[in-house]
Image (cartoon, rainbow, N blue to C red; front, side, top):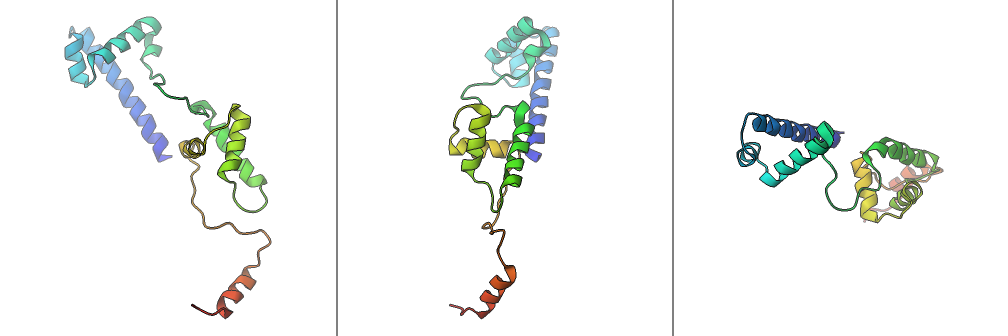
Length: 154
């Protein structure tokens, strides 16, 4: 949750920076001066202006940069999170594994993600947990504790 709020804050700051740049341009500053004031390269500023002219205010929003797009888009994060939690609920005993989530992602997205993509996606939607070793649903706690008390210490 903290990571999501931080990302939203960065998006707001970036958008405000673009508005500030346009205010400077409107006041008669040239691209080089404006770029120095908002701490971006002049080429980036020219791209913002071109996008604004082509698409209006929508052109000022951040667009995805380079690289492979995430398997699960931002709009589908909640749906994916619910699906993973349901997968855990349906499992009888133990925790779901990365392989189980990869199978789910393959069903949802159509292609098989790598293990690092699975865990990165889980982190992105806020589903990272660390647990001890899973326990069998029929495990007898009393018998385990009795065994611990009677066994020899090394």
